[in-house]
Length: 520
Image (cartoon, rainbow, N blue to C red; front, side, top):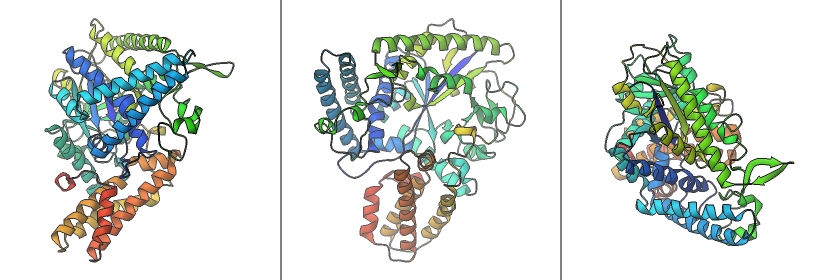
């Protein structure tokens, strides 16, 4: 192997499942991502499987997202939501008849129906379909932590760290029937010594944000364009920040181009509540519906209607430029670095959800690289490590993340610090519970739910949302509820006054990982 481009997509959403038969506002995050990102991505992977293409995507799927994808209630909500979306798109095609918006309305109707067809073709089991694609060699799957905890926040609790990593890896094995080779660090959060915990679990490689390698000790000879070996012997890849910035940044990257669709101008805010009530129940607030009729471009301060054809041309143009520029980059890198690699890692929802044309862009990139004569090829970490020249440079990566500022402030700050002490004490409280001689059936149920509440409380999403003031009230409520549930269960079981009905209600509200005891 000469030069390699590795695409890594991290698929994750917080566990927002609610027991109510009606979808909540937060569950819309999942429902939108399903038809805008995950099903179109599955369709793309199946397309290249039919073409007998070599692996070109490395994918991690977090346990919270996987649990919602496989949950019967969430699947019922998705089917109901898609019926409503199709009815809305049909009505919009009629309402916009003869206007400059009708083409977009018809496009959404087609996309909704396409997502439904992909969903039905896999029997509603996305994970099974992805597993088959992995077995066929189209995609390389990697593990991540149990509930997307920001791992540097738990340096003071090795038990919490090990539990997050162990459960994530065991869950992966349950889903895909094999142990993972690679591991995605949530938010690319790394601290010195974390590699030893990953090594103990059999992990062969992981990723850090670019400056995590550049600021490592000693300085890497090839910057981020060659994997290195951590002190524990695990391979480390550095995310190429310049390459990635061109793809995800709305300010300086492709998604901000004027021809692309504007994410924020949505019919959920533009159309009347009485009209939308004919398709959806009352969410108690205006919400995104996913039908958006305007481009990013403006004329005299007024948004210009979206032109799908122009956007598609723009996506192909950007893909061609991306591939051409990478070819030049690799030509330069090959002058001083043997078997250079560029790692382009993103949140999966960038493609299709945040950047509507992102799936088409990705398809174009894969097609253009596959044409050959580019001087580089698409690869996966395992293939690259097996075929590239052996790297002998051992480096301790530095503390880093891909969050704002490059370090920990998005998740570890004045507002969050008051919670981490309680979270770090949880593993010790569980050990006390394990030593009890209570009624076996009740004790097992208490232990299982205590583990669920602990893991869910550790999710990085709550701290990020509170810090960014995005759904901050919801995030704070989720965090404090999981902490209170945990403490109620453990203290009640230890003091022998745990109410079975109360425990059952907590289980009903958060049935995360049914066989949790097998994962821990």
